[in-house]
Image (tube, rainbow, N blue to C red):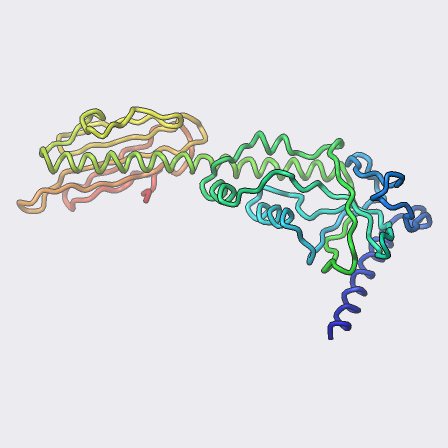
Length: 316
């Protein structure tokens, strides 16, 4: 069975290579030959790197399956959430070379990053939106000067060659720009949500402090300092304030300093049920980003209850 599987696998790779050759212009196909110089030797005529601007219409792009290095897996995982567009992408003219008795397909690819991979930091960044820097995406944009490195692929260890297409550098750059813009929007949203998490925690603390104050003194306050919780009136990303709407109704606000941020409003109300008096609270966030102060939560004294105003939704 193993031998049968190997024959099928080798046949599939051979078919894929033939397909790439068939897509190649006739004039180029007639010049195809095995490369004889060992690319690991100094005398090799194979360049160790090329720029995308040097890849003309005779080149094909494709992806592989079944052969992965750890760096490739990191790129693939990053691609799932939109932070990488070129994992596992190769460029070739269909040339082959023999090294130490083994045949290899000559291809070029974007270099795997040599930076150390910290899995904990990577997943924290994806989950919380931290470290999402749109400027880094701009710096990594491809251009005519972007370099691709020599890579030798062993047809016997590749699962398959996929998505084989003609390569047009102009089209590829335009596509990359569109993808970068989409990623930047995703990045900005992730950053805004990460910063909003701080504001959510802050307003919840204000609500809890107001409720504790009411239990101790029977009053609410419109003064942050009066809560004795050591809370500042602002941070790098938000302005904070509290307002005493009435002796039994207090609201709090977290207003984003950036137009990409989401605003939040909270409220605590002292209500009665028969002779019993207690507090209720709520936290609401704006449905749209911006610096406009959202409408305060609505107090319904007859039920009693608090609800988010139109344009806001409850935040948990």
